[in-house]
Length: 145
Image: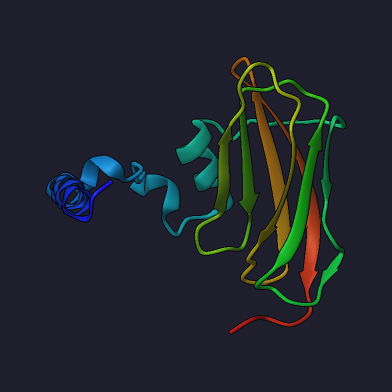
């Protein structure tokens, strides 16, 4: 490709991006990321706070986290759901993760989360309109800046 052709095509692509930036960004759901209690977060995100405790969901997290800025969390489930959520009870915004599951996937997810302070973590899986959940408590030894 010639330099002139490359520059012309690049400038056209850049102009398109500058003209329509909002269409290139993901939608932001304001009500899911507000400072609320955990019960209010369940109501806002899930539409209910009636969750069924399930032994089929396992949250693997350290009982004591040495650094609150990077707490490793694994969610393992035997439930074939269509949506997975992770909440941290005492965070400013309790909803940490919302993930769509396709094709009857059996969830296994590993991530690191930032925790404000010692708190309960809730993993919630939606299966056909019914919400299953498990929780685990993580103590934070040192809070990050």
